[in-house]
Image 1 (cartoon, helix red, strand yellow):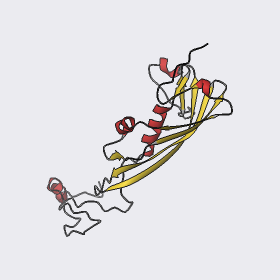
Image 2 (spheres, rainbow, N blue to C red; image 1 turned 90 degrees about the vertical axis):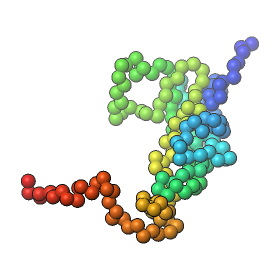
Image 3 (cartoon, rainbow, N blue to C red; image 1 turned 90 degrees about the horizontal axis):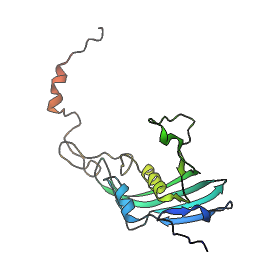
Length: 188
């Protein structure tokens, strides 16, 4: 009898996947999610979930899935904390074999390259790494509490969404004051 070994966390044995498919669900480990989050995001008590439908096509594995969850985010304009729900769908192909670009000194990506493809060797595909990549892609670079957020006043620090301030927007940083005397000739 052949001994079967248990795949490492986040990995699925290719032997379990059939042509008709395999549905797979996983809660991403909290420490894994924490390590990937930028400083303005915080994990909540609600887990980040990965749901994938995989099918075997010849020797490749086609994965269609979503990664979703709820986080807390700090607005980059006013520093208010708010809930942030995300759901990122993806389609990814795991191709059996060695990556042909691995032997090249410099990787060149053309417009025709399929960037949603990963090469794998062995008998399992790593969905944990894929889910982390997709989660990070779902997060905004500069999160805001709402599109019309007015932010904090750079002079007095008031939250302009809550109370208006009388500082005015035409205050010039003293380091740039010398530019006011600069005269530009429109006809060089």
